[in-house]
Length: 322
Ligand code: CUA
Image 1: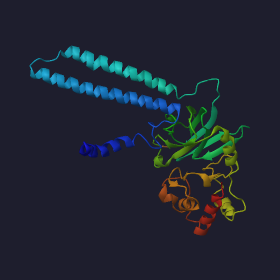
Image 2: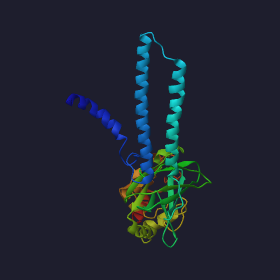
Image 3: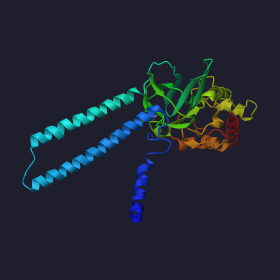
Image 4: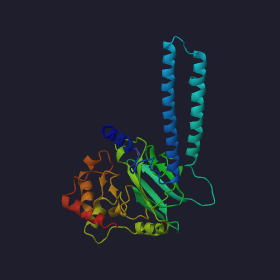
């Protein structure tokens, strides 16, 4: 038995590796994802039962053939070839439709919180609103309260993307000129990884984001903190930023920004749509120097005309955006 388990262990580990981790639908953290996971398990067990059934029928048929007694082909095809798949697929269809329905907003007594998500090549911008109705814009990180239904109004700026936070709910397309609404809820506070799930060009893989679910009582304070997380205007890099970056990048979460809004950049887990882990000023400087090779095709213009000292001042300036 130990020899067997030693041989089986790597296979089982490989098999189970897909079932956990920050992007796993099978590790749900909200009701939407839980229904997707339930559908997955139903399909898994049905497929397993069907596979075993097919093997059994194949063996049975072979034995009958060997004994010279063939099957009644007409009855066999009508039963196993038509009636059975129709029944199995109908059952799956009903469960799948109900699962999909559960991800859409429903009118109810408890009002859902409204947030907006916009996909563009290759990053996500988000807008949340504070209690007074003022917008708070961010890039790469969506802030929500835990334990409350949130309706994400999803659209796109250029091509079709897809908004997907596997641990919270199913995916929904982000379509230019059209708004899709996805309901999600995080049961507990935490950071939930999201990923663009529709091939959208060269850097589709580098188009991730995070949903940060705050304790409900801390949500207002988190939005207020983001709204004031501007870089220090007295920093020596402020003038360099104003001259070279500010025509596209905003640093005020209250205002929309054409390129990623950099308010609160120093607190972000990742930069460049997931290209780099944000380990402080060094990561920002690395991005400023090497973004053309780190993320080819990105719309950020070349910084070849800027010397290293200027780039370092800009990175230092952005590090104060917290
Ligand atoms: Cu955006 Cu793939």
